[in-house]
Length: 77
Image (cartoon, rainbow, N blue to C red; front, side):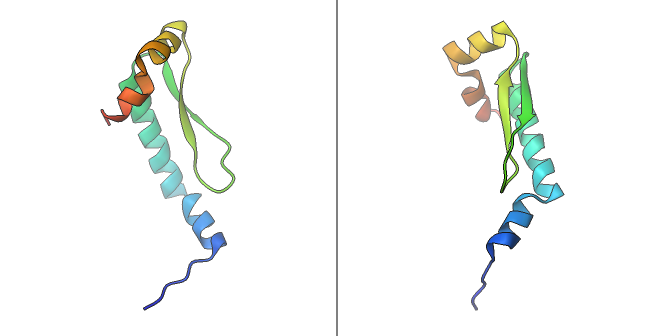
């Protein structure tokens, strides 16, 4: 059996409400695990759902710069 996907179909799947919601949920969990001062922001993804976890306070910036808070939070989710 051979299955062939078109680029348009894959784009629709990656931008579907379910995938966007799941991606947002994971990003919010990573932000929460990184500590106070981190938030999940929606990015501009033309072909897929994209979220980024960013620091918003000086303390969070410092924690991320010196201790890689966001990277370490990935292990906690």
